[in-house]
Image (cartoon, rainbow, N blue to C red; front, top):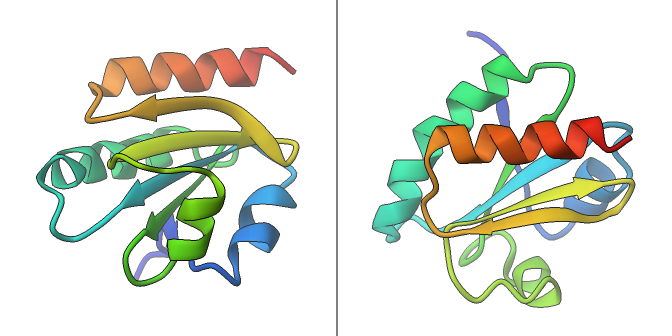
Length: 113
């Protein structure tokens, strides 16, 4: 089985995987009952393959795995995609966005180094 391209996070793994990452990290804040999240999920999977080695991709279920992290970052609507860089928020996309928009935002963060 191939290595998972989008890593599942929880409150305890968030700091190590995201804030301490050497490369930018896109975190998909989602929940299983969220229909727009199901639209975004395959897009995030595709982008994870395209940006392999340049951006780390993670997902955090705000209900079961990361309620404290979601609260800490004031995630009030899902899906919310947050791009972290050097331990801080570089960009944020709220709602289901087309792949091109997400890729453009990732490119901006990558160019801004």
